[in-house]
Amino acid sequence: MGTTNAILFLVIGLIIGAILALVMAVLTGFGAGKKANKIISDAKKEADKHKRDTLLELKEESHKLKLETDKEIKERKSELLSSESRLQEREKSLDKREELLQKRDNSLEERNNNLTLMQAKVQEKEAKMDELLKQEMEKLESIAKFSREKAHDLILERVEASMAKEIAELIKEREAEAKLETDKKAKNMLVESMQRYASDVASEQTVSTITLPNDDMKGRLIGREGRNIRTIEAVTGVDLIIDDTPEAITISSFDPLRREIAKITIETLIKDGRIHPARIEEIYDKTCKDMNAKILEIGNETLIDLGLTKFDPELVNLVGKLKFRTSYGQNALSHSIEVAKICGTIAGELGENINLAKRAGLLHDIGKAIDSEIEGSHVEIGVTIAKKYHEDKVVINSIASHHGNTEPKSVIAWLVQIADTLSAARPGARNESLENYIQRLEKLESISTDIEGVEKAYALQAGRELRVMVRPDDISDAESYKVARDLKEKIENEMEYPGTIKITVIRETRAQEEAK
Image (tube, rainbow, N blue to C red; front, side):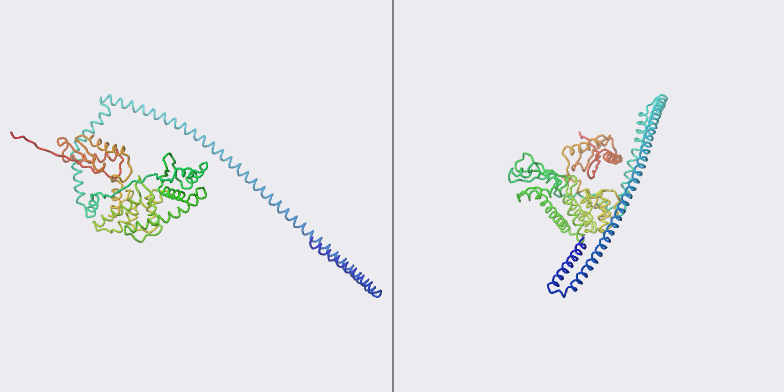
């Protein structure tokens, strides 16, 4: 349309120019008439020519637009037909799938009915078998005139009476042979007999308390309709306990890292004074970044304290994370440092590599740093981490074997296993209620006094040692070994306890006379 207007304006301009030329010719005189007529004639011809050209261009442009429109309509129709075809195919596919599901449902229902019938038949047969066995047993007891229980007890009594001395002597011989094994076995026995390592311990709690400047701050932390407290709990992942305690609130969480981040976040908000959802999220993000730097700092301080070097920065970060992980109330990093120091001390006494022993002791529970993020036990995760950072094979085996899942292949692996038990099992290291503690000691003593020939039993060292007094008239020296072994098996089968329990059977014979 723009081209058509331009051409029309051009034609009009030419006509006006021709008219002007004509007027000028008239004004200049009659002699220029012919020339003016010729100019006008030429102008008309030129105008006609431009008009024809313009009409041709308009027709061509109109034809081109029509062709493009027809082409676009055909393409749209083709797309619609293709979409309709796909929808029909999908509908057919869904119909087939629905038919298959219906067949499968019918098949499963039929199979379930068959299984129910078979189960009923099996139960009926079992009931018949039980009845037949009962009848056969009653016939046998009536023929033998002796019950099954009495026969069982009589056989056991005879076997125990005839074999008691032989069993006790065999146990004594085996223990004597074990004492004469190689130097490596002697080292391991020496390590197992060492005294417990003693250090101050403090169990971790699952709550933290924040002191408030005034009780009005509680209302500001709660916010209008509770929006602030909801934001804090949602962002930090902890529970805020706001009770009647004056000028204090409590943070509750089983994750020490979350609890610490929440505590710092809330304390920062209290100091800042601006408490609203956007500010809470901003302070929380900043606290998380600061906490990551603090974790790395804790890891580096731990390595400096133990005198260890050549640790990958990511591994140092994992060591720092142990600070915010607990096991039965015992801080994982404190426990790992303690195990490392015990291993280093004993390794020095035995002539082993002290730094390697410390390294194995520190990393034995490294899997606990991320066991809440990755599926698997902390032992499996720890082995994977040690392999990832190319730790020594002794360290890898120490991590894999410290809970007895794998056989220890070195003295250091044995040291880690022993040091781990000593650190975790000693009194006060882990949370245990007074009631459970007393029940465990009472059960330990009652199991001992149930054995025939035992006079008294005493649980010592917070239940880590058991001393049993036997009557010398009923128990011989050889049989005392069997009593110790029987007690060991009963305790392992009937009780749950941390660490190990040392059992000592004492037999004392006193000869007395009176001189008159």
